[in-house]
Image 1 (cartoon, rainbow, N blue to C red):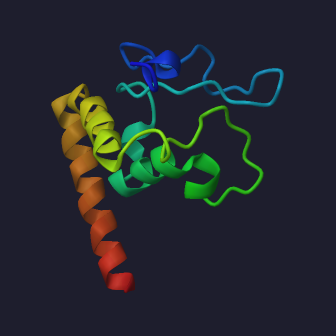
Image 2 (image 1 turned 90 degrees about the horizontal axis):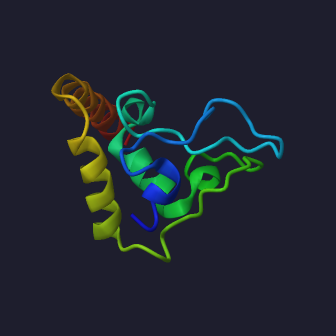
Length: 113
């Protein structure tokens, strides 16, 4: 609640106008419910974004964000628990699609090695 819900909402609803930059050039916190885009990203990226921050995880040097990197605040297990909670709130069909996304991503990663 202290780290994620303060911006992403108690019900994962995110902040209003999350797709549009604010007057300072920042995007508001997106929702993590079914109306957002979280489920479009594999678990490995979601974990990296949470632990390292968006700019480092996505290799976006000049990306402006208010979301801190939580690697020094949360343990890996706590990050996984937070992401697991988010996913537990998604509808079954969305979880199935996300599971398939993870399988495809894992196959691509293993074949790239």
